[in-house]
Image (cartoon, rainbow, N blue to C red; front, side, top):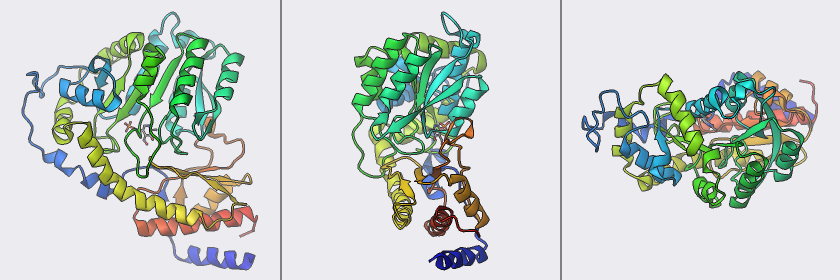
Length: 403
Ligand SMILES: Cc1ncc(COP(=O)(O)O)c(C=O)c1O
């Protein structure tokens, strides 16, 4: 039995493979879907007569804000249309609170902390670290955050200032938070403090590739719970049009809106309105976005299906895996504490996987079990090879074979 796996490993090694599945990026066939945006002919003026070639409209042109309003289901006055990165808007939100939050700027708190569901997005943890904000991990369930753990952490610590999460197709394990989970999260957080910040990174809002449970618009749930001032939702076109070349949006209200406006006024005179116009001309409205996303789904779905078909070959004793219906990632959770070893073995065979631990604050996965797989940015043929390498490595590490 062992000899068979060892032979497989050696044969794979002889092939001198070189494949990188570390990052969730759109593949070039997906980017091709938006090529027209580059050449689209646009007028020099916005629908309100604003000269798109000049400074002005710090919170985005009307047509871009309207598109954001449709996408996030929030009133246009609550929408900011920014430049190309939602992560930047999230960072600016944290920065604005760090410098100017009332009554106490976060920089003046002794030991501010944010709740972060795990596994999570490595850049979120890095961002909080930049500000000296501790990330307090809580588990994720199939329907969203573990509410009991959330409440328990809040009861333990009064310096928790917010939560940062990906509410749909969570990065990396793909959970879609239920409406009930979101409502309860709002209730628990706002009862804890009227300044508690709900920061939602909605990067995968329209990124379903298989039938996905419905989720009410977050803004609607926030409105029902009367927490719009404490809620910030960000999203972008990075995985709709071009990675790092789309438009970003934010929905928020009250003091949170004032804070972001304040900090952005100092740092950027206005976003790229020409790119905003190109995007609004190309997509027109939310139906245009959804039709476009169906084309992405047709390109992505087969890759996830390939990945699932390989993972299914592994014995359930080795571990389990998430089967997301959208987004860009799959997580594999090993039954034994061997994630680091699996990633090392893959590397030895020429397949690069996101370092084990990176989906946890401070790169510390207490069980050393979570591995993030990103199947989109390779051809189907390469993915087949990468998955063969992956399952072989899991088997070797699981059986503790010396290689
Ligand atoms: C959860 C999440 N948020 C944000 C981003 C980056 O988005 P943007 O390019 O809009 O900054 C990514 C990209 O991988 C992501 O996975």
